[in-house]
Image (cartoon, rainbow, N blue to C red; front, side, top):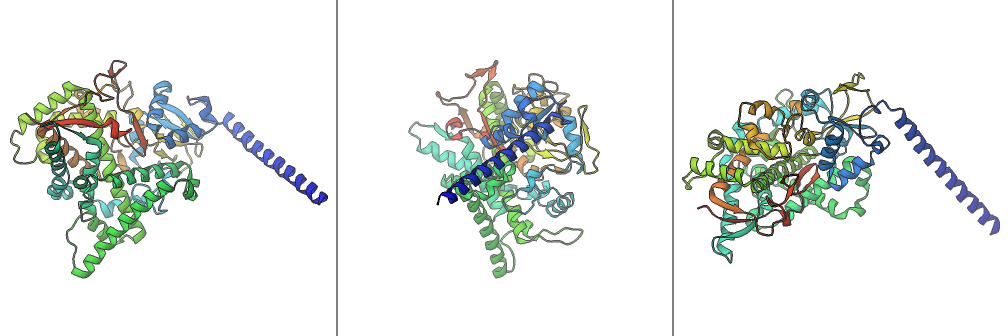
Length: 517
């Protein structure tokens, strides 16, 4: 037994030594590469030149939005975000990067939960072009406008029914406390349900947050796997997140199967909605249709992207209105003067045409609080030439360029007093040029394909709610015009997992409503 014990002990020591030497080799190589890296001229925290851990830590904690803004505020338009990541916040450079497929999406987009690329996640320019040809007509403004009555019925009008019910049941006459963040997410899911799945999810009528909470966890899991792919194999450690993913997949798969069964039985679909258009979509050039795995992935994307982004934008917009009472009062008065008749809902085209201040408010909200706040990495051009960005040359394969959209929107070089919410930026002679520097819907060849649906929901929801109700923050509201930071109202902290919304909305997004005077 003794020789065996000695052999085991020796082998354990040898293994430990080997492991230590290997770790030492890896660390030393990493340090040497960092010391001689061509990125060393780019400003940023010293730690970031050696490791991506600060970047990944901010992504996993949901604080990347704030982290990016702080780095760019301190170091300028180009920042060393990690060992092989460089962030850029110059709006004209961002538009140049987004203008073509030369800067393909980064490796994290390929780490899909479904392992099937979507119109959003694909790094292949040809697949992106194919999907846009297949889906282009789905999201055209004429297509969305043809479904506007459904959007109103299952969107803002359904929320009004829910809030009117809360008023009727409130202990205090003509005053009730509601949560606008969950109300807007209810709109998002019910509208996408009726347009993309053939039936409303009834989130607003039932007041059930199961689906909204599941999709929030789904986005958290997507963000985490994007920077740490090993999490895909750690279901045991992230049970609730993977359970949310399974829930989303089940909802999507059943909706597709139910629709196909209905068509098989009746010979035609119940209606031509987004789900049916996705099922029927063909590439007009090749006739290519979409297979089932891609259908599930694309439809899950529709549900996630079509709800969270727009809902968060509406939440941020109301927050800013409550924090700037003069802006709220002016917008409310504009809406009620232009649309005094409450017997008919306000539609998109008339709101857009007759409420320029509402346009300015939405634009400024998307500038200050963009709903997509991930690090959005892009590869350097495939021809091996590298790229020069804001005067810094970045050699091929040395780094990925991250799109600092949130930081660009708060650049003091472009926006005077950038943290202040000021819709006047979009009311004067500079309105159009200022809007070009707002990249809330991205830009160029990868511009958000669902932006028309977002515009219709934003205009109709905000216009109808601000005409019908008076809003007041509760006396104990944690954030509001009473809480100042550097002389301006402190915003509700954001939490960003691909999309960015208010942190702890159950506590921070309460508001008192009463019928409009």
